[in-house]
Image (tube, rainbow, N blue to C red):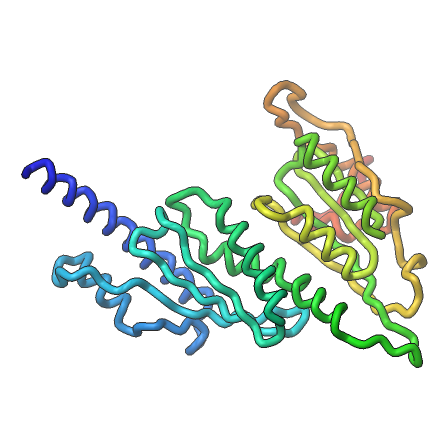
Length: 302
């Protein structure tokens, strides 16, 4: 009997640990979305009931936390409702998530949720991931809306087609792996984009071309589990031409600079940022240096 009782005690302790983590994540969400109605709880008393359960003033297990967050996506201007259910043993059990938008058809909604589920599946048990899911939707959902528009908007021959030319500056903590470097180059050469991938630490990628090509590049290289990467800056301009006159780079290439540090097994070497600045100057992109690294650019000979 004692064995069973002891087991139950451990179970409830770990359950309490999970519920404490859930309350912590809810606090983070309410600070991210402070406006009335942005986070809609299915049961308005659920957080109070969980607190009472944790304090020991309530014996019955409280209901699961279920809520909907309305996300405003900037480009294109659309809303996504993210429906979230936290099982009692989340974050050690999988989070249940579903994103929906009136702007998406069934197929696109299915693909969006497939991508989101795959991304969340890369997290380790015990990791909180609602905030990461929100970030993923804000970074990646545009391409799902874009695909739908490309398929369904009738093209009119009468007036010249306006395209958006885009340049994205992408920062990663590091890019070393041979297969990842090959994938980035292959994707860059397959799509009609130009730019470069600077390998090492940090890793910098610039990709430029028509918006849909750049967004497909971004979606493809990130998917499904590249966590430490972000688009730091994007420049876009409307054009009726083919965009060739707007390009700063002739092709999509790997950029290899001299490195400082250890070339040994740890791969812990930092790229020569002075050389990188000279490279940016040559391609009329010096202004991006401060955006990427948060420091003023100084000439390498100073």
